[in-house]
Length: 340
Image 1 (tube, rainbow, N blue to C red):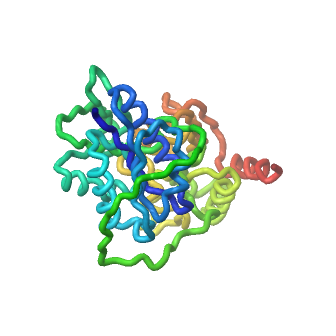
Image 2 (image 1 turned 180 degrees about the vertical axis):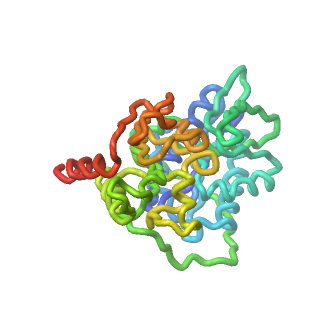
Image 3 (image 1 turned 60 degrees about the horizontal axis):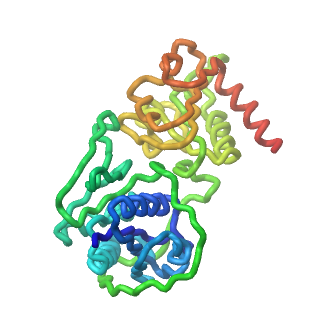
Protein backbone atom coordinates (compact mmCIF):
# COMPACT_ATOMS: atom_id res chain seq x y z
CA UNK A 1 0.00 0.00 0.00
CA UNK A 2 1.27 3.45 -0.89
CA UNK A 3 2.10 5.92 1.86
CA UNK A 4 1.75 9.70 2.01
CA UNK A 5 3.93 11.39 4.63
CA UNK A 6 3.04 14.70 6.23
CA UNK A 7 6.32 16.18 7.45
CA UNK A 8 6.38 19.14 9.83
CA UNK A 9 8.50 20.85 12.46
CA UNK A 10 7.08 22.34 15.62
CA UNK A 11 6.90 26.04 16.41
CA UNK A 12 8.55 27.66 19.44
CA UNK A 13 5.61 26.68 21.68
CA UNK A 14 5.74 23.03 20.59
CA UNK A 15 2.60 23.12 18.43
CA UNK A 16 2.08 23.20 14.67
CA UNK A 17 1.63 26.51 12.87
CA UNK A 18 -0.99 27.42 10.29
CA UNK A 19 1.30 26.60 7.35
CA UNK A 20 1.84 23.09 8.71
CA UNK A 21 -1.90 22.54 9.19
CA UNK A 22 -2.48 23.62 5.58
CA UNK A 23 0.06 21.04 4.39
CA UNK A 24 -1.63 18.42 6.60
CA UNK A 25 -4.99 19.13 4.95
CA UNK A 26 -3.38 18.68 1.53
CA UNK A 27 -1.66 15.44 2.59
CA UNK A 28 -4.96 14.11 3.96
CA UNK A 29 -6.75 14.82 0.68
CA UNK A 30 -3.98 13.28 -1.43
CA UNK A 31 -3.91 10.14 0.69
CA UNK A 32 -7.69 9.77 0.39
CA UNK A 33 -7.61 10.26 -3.37
CA UNK A 34 -4.84 7.68 -3.80
CA UNK A 35 -6.29 5.21 -1.34
CA UNK A 36 -2.98 5.43 0.50
CA UNK A 37 -2.18 5.43 4.19
CA UNK A 38 -1.30 8.72 5.85
CA UNK A 39 1.72 9.01 8.15
CA UNK A 40 2.55 12.09 10.21
CA UNK A 41 6.21 12.86 10.84
CA UNK A 42 7.10 15.52 13.40
CA UNK A 43 10.43 17.06 14.40
CA UNK A 44 11.23 19.31 17.35
CA UNK A 45 12.38 19.56 20.93
CA UNK A 46 9.22 17.81 22.16
CA UNK A 47 6.53 16.92 19.63
CA UNK A 48 3.98 15.47 22.04
CA UNK A 49 1.80 18.61 22.00
CA UNK A 50 1.92 18.74 18.19
CA UNK A 51 1.05 15.04 17.91
CA UNK A 52 -1.93 15.46 20.24
CA UNK A 53 -2.99 18.55 18.26
CA UNK A 54 -3.48 16.45 15.09
CA UNK A 55 -4.38 13.14 16.75
CA UNK A 56 -7.67 12.89 14.81
CA UNK A 57 -6.25 13.77 11.38
CA UNK A 58 -6.60 10.19 10.13
CA UNK A 59 -2.91 9.26 10.19
CA UNK A 60 -2.21 5.58 10.82
CA UNK A 61 1.30 6.26 12.14
CA UNK A 62 2.91 9.09 14.02
CA UNK A 63 6.70 9.33 13.79
CA UNK A 64 8.69 11.68 16.00
CA UNK A 65 12.24 13.00 16.20
CA UNK A 66 12.58 14.57 19.64
CA UNK A 67 15.44 16.46 21.25
CA UNK A 68 16.66 19.92 22.14
CA UNK A 69 19.13 19.73 19.26
CA UNK A 70 16.13 19.76 16.89
CA UNK A 71 14.45 22.78 18.47
CA UNK A 72 16.22 25.43 16.39
CA UNK A 73 16.38 25.77 12.61
CA UNK A 74 19.74 24.45 11.43
CA UNK A 75 20.48 22.67 8.18
CA UNK A 76 22.49 19.75 9.61
CA UNK A 77 20.00 18.76 12.30
CA UNK A 78 16.89 19.53 10.22
CA UNK A 79 18.13 17.49 7.27
CA UNK A 80 19.10 14.58 9.53
CA UNK A 81 15.71 14.58 11.26
CA UNK A 82 13.74 14.82 8.01
CA UNK A 83 15.82 12.06 6.39
CA UNK A 84 15.30 9.74 9.36
CA UNK A 85 11.53 10.26 9.32
CA UNK A 86 11.28 9.78 5.54
CA UNK A 87 13.24 6.52 5.71
CA UNK A 88 11.14 5.25 8.61
CA UNK A 89 7.90 6.09 6.80
CA UNK A 90 9.07 4.70 3.43
CA UNK A 91 6.65 7.12 1.81
CA UNK A 92 6.05 7.68 -1.90
CA UNK A 93 4.81 11.25 -1.48
CA UNK A 94 6.08 13.65 1.19
CA UNK A 95 4.10 16.84 1.80
CA UNK A 96 5.61 19.61 3.91
CA UNK A 97 4.92 23.31 4.50
CA UNK A 98 7.16 25.70 2.54
CA UNK A 99 8.59 27.36 5.62
CA UNK A 100 12.07 28.88 5.47
CA UNK A 101 13.27 26.01 7.66
CA UNK A 102 12.10 23.21 5.38
CA UNK A 103 12.87 25.12 2.18
CA UNK A 104 16.50 25.22 3.26
CA UNK A 105 16.80 21.55 4.22
CA UNK A 106 14.49 19.34 2.16
CA UNK A 107 16.23 19.65 -1.21
CA UNK A 108 19.27 18.02 0.36
CA UNK A 109 17.06 15.35 1.92
CA UNK A 110 15.56 14.52 -1.48
CA UNK A 111 19.07 14.04 -2.88
CA UNK A 112 20.02 11.74 0.02
CA UNK A 113 16.92 9.64 -0.58
CA UNK A 114 17.44 9.47 -4.34
CA UNK A 115 14.14 11.22 -4.90
CA UNK A 116 12.93 14.55 -6.26
CA UNK A 117 11.69 17.78 -4.71
CA UNK A 118 9.40 20.58 -5.90
CA UNK A 119 9.09 23.84 -3.98
CA UNK A 120 6.59 26.71 -4.10
CA UNK A 121 3.67 24.40 -4.88
CA UNK A 122 0.32 26.18 -4.77
CA UNK A 123 -1.90 23.11 -5.15
CA UNK A 124 -1.59 19.32 -5.03
CA UNK A 125 -4.28 17.22 -6.72
CA UNK A 126 -4.81 13.64 -7.87
CA UNK A 127 -6.19 12.90 -11.35
CA UNK A 128 -6.55 9.39 -12.74
CA UNK A 129 -4.36 8.07 -9.96
CA UNK A 130 -1.52 10.52 -10.70
CA UNK A 131 -0.35 13.20 -8.27
CA UNK A 132 -0.14 16.63 -9.88
CA UNK A 133 1.54 19.71 -8.46
CA UNK A 134 0.63 23.23 -9.52
CA UNK A 135 3.18 26.01 -9.21
CA UNK A 136 3.96 29.40 -10.73
CA UNK A 137 6.98 30.50 -12.74
CA UNK A 138 8.37 33.82 -13.94
CA UNK A 139 7.05 35.89 -11.04
CA UNK A 140 3.60 34.28 -11.11
CA UNK A 141 3.05 35.01 -14.79
CA UNK A 142 3.04 31.37 -15.91
CA UNK A 143 1.36 28.40 -14.23
CA UNK A 144 2.61 24.84 -14.65
CA UNK A 145 1.19 21.46 -13.64
CA UNK A 146 3.86 18.87 -12.89
CA UNK A 147 3.84 15.08 -12.66
CA UNK A 148 6.85 13.00 -11.63
CA UNK A 149 7.59 9.29 -11.77
CA UNK A 150 10.54 9.46 -9.35
CA UNK A 151 9.88 8.52 -5.75
CA UNK A 152 10.01 9.66 -3.05
CA UNK A 153 8.63 12.98 -4.24
CA UNK A 154 8.94 15.77 -1.68
CA UNK A 155 6.50 18.65 -2.19
CA UNK A 156 6.65 21.95 -0.29
CA UNK A 157 3.26 23.67 -0.21
CA UNK A 158 3.22 27.46 -0.11
CA UNK A 159 1.41 28.92 2.93
CA UNK A 160 -1.96 30.54 2.34
CA UNK A 161 -2.96 28.38 -0.64
CA UNK A 162 -5.67 26.35 1.06
CA UNK A 163 -7.69 26.06 4.25
CA UNK A 164 -5.79 24.53 7.20
CA UNK A 165 -6.79 21.22 8.75
CA UNK A 166 -9.14 21.66 11.69
CA UNK A 167 -10.09 18.82 13.95
CA UNK A 168 -10.44 17.87 17.57
CA UNK A 169 -7.26 17.23 19.53
CA UNK A 170 -6.64 13.91 21.20
CA UNK A 171 -3.95 11.79 22.75
CA UNK A 172 -1.51 9.81 20.64
CA UNK A 173 1.75 8.03 21.32
CA UNK A 174 4.24 8.76 18.55
CA UNK A 175 6.93 6.29 17.51
CA UNK A 176 10.38 7.62 18.26
CA UNK A 177 12.85 7.81 15.38
CA UNK A 178 16.57 8.10 16.00
CA UNK A 179 18.43 10.80 14.07
CA UNK A 180 21.96 12.11 14.26
CA UNK A 181 22.36 15.77 15.07
CA UNK A 182 26.03 16.50 14.55
CA UNK A 183 26.58 20.16 13.76
CA UNK A 184 29.38 22.72 13.73
CA UNK A 185 27.05 25.53 14.83
CA UNK A 186 25.43 26.34 18.14
CA UNK A 187 22.37 28.56 18.59
CA UNK A 188 23.08 30.96 21.44
CA UNK A 189 19.94 33.09 21.22
CA UNK A 190 17.47 34.86 18.98
CA UNK A 191 17.34 38.55 18.15
CA UNK A 192 14.00 39.74 16.82
CA UNK A 193 11.95 42.95 16.85
CA UNK A 194 9.19 43.26 19.39
CA UNK A 195 5.72 42.32 18.22
CA UNK A 196 4.70 45.97 17.96
CA UNK A 197 7.57 46.80 15.62
CA UNK A 198 7.26 43.75 13.36
CA UNK A 199 5.97 45.07 10.04
CA UNK A 200 5.88 41.85 7.95
CA UNK A 201 2.99 39.67 9.12
CA UNK A 202 2.09 36.90 6.65
CA UNK A 203 -0.84 35.84 8.85
CA UNK A 204 -2.45 39.32 8.85
CA UNK A 205 -5.85 39.87 7.26
CA UNK A 206 -4.78 43.16 5.66
CA UNK A 207 -1.77 44.17 3.57
CA UNK A 208 -0.98 47.90 3.78
CA UNK A 209 1.25 49.08 0.92
CA UNK A 210 3.07 52.42 0.99
CA UNK A 211 4.31 54.08 -2.17
CA UNK A 212 6.95 56.72 -2.82
CA UNK A 213 4.34 59.47 -2.63
CA UNK A 214 4.60 59.44 1.15
CA UNK A 215 8.10 60.94 0.92
CA UNK A 216 7.36 63.57 -1.74
CA UNK A 217 6.44 67.23 -1.28
CA UNK A 218 2.89 67.65 -0.06
CA UNK A 219 0.33 70.40 -0.62
CA UNK A 220 2.26 72.84 1.58
CA UNK A 221 5.42 72.32 -0.46
CA UNK A 222 7.25 70.43 2.31
CA UNK A 223 8.20 66.79 2.83
CA UNK A 224 6.61 65.10 5.86
CA UNK A 225 8.45 61.76 5.98
CA UNK A 226 8.50 61.65 9.79
CA UNK A 227 4.74 62.17 10.03
CA UNK A 228 4.21 59.62 7.25
CA UNK A 229 6.14 56.99 9.18
CA UNK A 230 4.19 57.75 12.36
CA UNK A 231 0.85 57.46 10.55
CA UNK A 232 1.84 54.18 8.91
CA UNK A 233 3.22 52.56 12.07
CA UNK A 234 0.22 53.69 14.15
CA UNK A 235 -2.09 52.09 11.61
CA UNK A 236 -0.07 48.86 11.46
CA UNK A 237 -0.15 48.49 15.24
CA UNK A 238 -3.84 49.29 15.57
CA UNK A 239 -5.01 47.15 12.64
CA UNK A 240 -2.40 44.38 13.04
CA UNK A 241 -1.73 44.78 9.32
CA UNK A 242 1.31 43.73 7.31
CA UNK A 243 3.46 46.36 5.62
CA UNK A 244 4.43 46.28 1.95
CA UNK A 245 6.14 48.82 -0.26
CA UNK A 246 6.66 49.71 -3.90
CA UNK A 247 10.10 49.36 -5.48
CA UNK A 248 10.25 53.13 -5.88
CA UNK A 249 9.95 53.62 -2.13
CA UNK A 250 12.37 50.94 -0.96
CA UNK A 251 14.97 52.17 -3.47
CA UNK A 252 14.96 55.72 -2.08
CA UNK A 253 17.47 54.85 0.65
CA UNK A 254 20.18 54.58 -1.99
CA UNK A 255 19.30 57.88 -3.63
CA UNK A 256 19.87 60.20 -0.67
CA UNK A 257 16.18 61.11 -0.39
CA UNK A 258 13.85 61.13 2.59
CA UNK A 259 13.02 57.56 3.56
CA UNK A 260 10.79 55.63 5.94
CA UNK A 261 12.88 53.93 8.61
CA UNK A 262 10.38 51.07 8.92
CA UNK A 263 10.74 50.13 5.25
CA UNK A 264 13.36 47.79 3.76
CA UNK A 265 13.68 45.70 0.62
CA UNK A 266 12.06 42.84 2.57
CA UNK A 267 8.80 44.80 2.36
CA UNK A 268 8.90 45.14 -1.42
CA UNK A 269 5.84 43.91 -3.31
CA UNK A 270 5.80 43.31 -7.05
CA UNK A 271 7.62 41.73 -9.96
CA UNK A 272 11.02 41.91 -8.24
CA UNK A 273 9.60 41.57 -4.73
CA UNK A 274 7.14 39.28 -3.00
CA UNK A 275 3.66 38.10 -3.92
CA UNK A 276 1.69 37.94 -0.65
CA UNK A 277 -1.64 36.22 -0.13
CA UNK A 278 -3.53 38.43 2.31
CA UNK A 279 -7.36 38.49 2.04
CA UNK A 280 -7.40 42.29 1.67
CA UNK A 281 -5.00 44.98 0.50
CA UNK A 282 -4.85 48.77 0.78
CA UNK A 283 -2.43 50.74 -1.40
CA UNK A 284 -1.47 54.30 -0.52
CA UNK A 285 0.53 56.89 -2.49
CA UNK A 286 1.31 54.29 -5.16
CA UNK A 287 0.42 54.57 -8.85
CA UNK A 288 -0.33 50.86 -9.31
CA UNK A 289 1.81 50.27 -12.39
CA UNK A 290 2.05 46.73 -13.74
CA UNK A 291 5.47 45.75 -12.26
CA UNK A 292 4.06 46.50 -8.80
CA UNK A 293 0.45 45.40 -9.32
CA UNK A 294 1.54 41.92 -10.44
CA UNK A 295 2.52 41.32 -6.81
CA UNK A 296 -1.14 41.75 -5.86
CA UNK A 297 -2.20 38.75 -7.93
CA UNK A 298 -3.40 36.75 -4.93
CA UNK A 299 -4.95 39.63 -2.92
CA UNK A 300 -8.69 38.99 -2.95
CA UNK A 301 -9.99 42.51 -2.23
CA UNK A 302 -7.96 45.50 -3.42
CA UNK A 303 -8.43 49.15 -2.46
CA UNK A 304 -6.22 52.16 -3.13
CA UNK A 305 -5.84 55.80 -2.06
CA UNK A 306 -4.39 58.15 -4.66
CA UNK A 307 -4.84 61.79 -5.68
CA UNK A 308 -4.63 60.82 -9.37
CA UNK A 309 -8.02 59.57 -10.69
CA UNK A 310 -6.22 58.16 -13.75
CA UNK A 311 -3.59 56.11 -11.90
CA UNK A 312 -3.03 52.44 -12.63
CA UNK A 313 -5.39 51.36 -9.86
CA UNK A 314 -8.25 53.13 -11.67
CA UNK A 315 -7.71 50.92 -14.71
CA UNK A 316 -9.22 47.73 -13.40
CA UNK A 317 -6.47 46.88 -10.90
CA UNK A 318 -8.38 47.87 -7.76
CA UNK A 319 -11.90 47.12 -6.60
CA UNK A 320 -12.22 50.57 -5.00
CA UNK A 321 -10.14 53.71 -5.60
CA UNK A 322 -10.37 56.59 -3.12
CA UNK A 323 -9.30 59.82 -4.83
CA UNK A 324 -8.03 61.58 -1.72
CA UNK A 325 -4.98 62.72 0.23
CA UNK A 326 -3.51 59.66 1.99
CA UNK A 327 -2.26 61.81 4.89
CA UNK A 328 -5.78 63.11 5.60
CA UNK A 329 -7.40 59.69 5.16
CA UNK A 330 -4.96 57.88 7.45
CA UNK A 331 -5.26 60.57 10.14
CA UNK A 332 -9.00 59.98 10.21
CA UNK A 333 -8.65 56.19 10.08
CA UNK A 334 -6.17 56.15 12.95
CA UNK A 335 -8.45 58.39 15.01
CA UNK A 336 -11.33 55.96 14.48
CA UNK A 337 -9.16 52.97 15.37
CA UNK A 338 -7.99 54.72 18.55
CA UNK A 339 -11.60 54.97 19.72
CA UNK A 340 -12.04 51.20 19.68
